[in-house]
Image 1 (cartoon, one colour):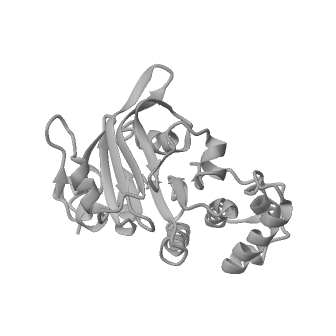
Image 2: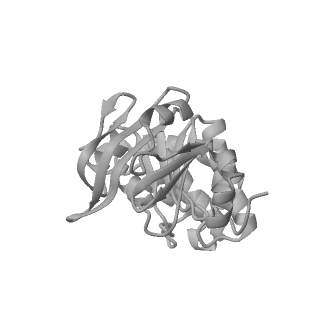
Length: 262
């Protein structure tokens, strides 16, 4: 168990150990927020290439701000974000996607309902210089997901909630990112659809080698999937463990899992 000590601070060395000593994505001493408001305080993170990390914690803990800071949607007051040893702290969101190969699947429904499934996928390649590149990747994505392939020419409004979320996640693949940020992948979905979404995430990690950082209010589902789990409170990292160990933590069960995890 890695818990915060010394004013709620988890040591970067412990985070390095959880990441197997390979911090493909690394955040150091980050202070970030919006306007003049600081949401994150001395926040650090490590995740290895091809690993998945789930951020959990109470509402307002700063989980989504971590994703926003990585992608360039939050204001960074101090600290550093590196990807593969490259400092990407001050890159714009578009540069994060195109040059640093970081994609972001936002919380909520971002599918264009009056566009076809295929057209929605192609929207993920809006920064590519040649539209043919997007079409080539979109064909490969459709081949990987039969449910989307079967409805490629239908308007996206006909998709179920789970299929819409899979479409949003799949659209992020058009730019061939190394890192995918996903905010609340299960929000508003029924159990069967949640399973569909997490099977898609498992494919991205295990078969495609993508590095995943997700925020998930369904802590049980998120932590059972993730290689590593971080707990945030009041904008600080207060605990970091392998996802399965956090599930067995009595304190986590009391706070987030509706009783002690079994």
